[in-house]
Image 1 (spheres, rainbow over the protein chains, first blue to last red):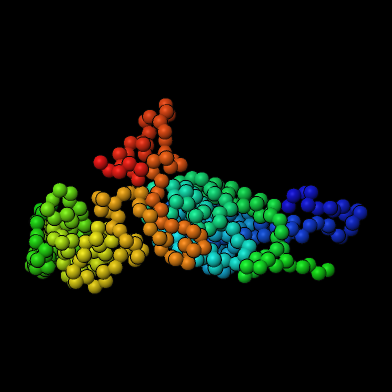
Image 2 (cartoon, rainbow over the protein chains, first blue to last red):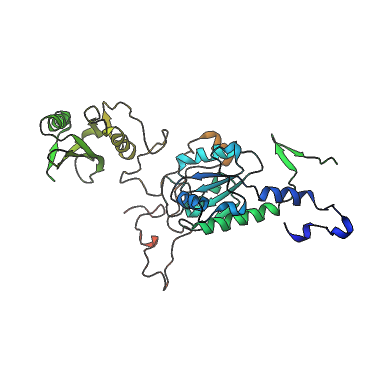
Length: 177
Length: 175
């Protein structure tokens, strides 16, 4: 959490911390990102390495890889998205509960990469909104970690974290003290 | 590798005899091919391996009217190979138990490995209509010339392979 988010002085305020709701909610969310590994090609190997002990994605609070979209809030698209697979990627994205984020890992997921061909979707951002693009072919695990930390920073700076879109309507969660 | 040109009408008898009498019991490969400038446009090549004699034999079959008898009744491993050759070239394998596409989606209208099909592709509707409605996405020709990764020459890139050398793109038809 950024220091300016607090208004805390233990001598003055005792056991009370004053902050904004967005800051608290975003802080919680950014440190419990549950990624859904959409491994489609060689980028998935680097994604697995990032989850292993050497690179250890859990240092940053996002190690709980879930293979069900209903239990995940961040889809890491790791690999080449063909037109045939694009439909599946979109359907899985639709099944994820909000709030949700998408990371396009590597050249293929970001732009189609070297696959300038009839079979390949030229960037996964054509079918789902992408929050972070990671360059590389494939990116090293460090690059993935860097991208995920950028995503955390993005989550931390999001506004309206209590606002939710539900069946086309915007719903505001009320905090009752 | 010895190669035999076999007529489609004789193919099943030849493959059957090679399997049962000569010991060529393993189908190593089956692929389609397009032969430009020949009277029969498409052909199929079958590689058979004898696991006892350690020998290969290659059969070449012309696809008269784009049709070849399926050998998947003799070698079940040919099933998916034949589906791929159908998908990519449009060669119809008569008697195939499951004659669907295997790589492209079922409603795709073209056969992409044909010589007259551009590498970039041809615009067709997105496979899933409901996803296309939400995203507005179509299956579009991939950017080749002028795409984001094309080098436009200069000192650094002279030694690099670049897409500018391509004589056949979606902007300039094949001569």
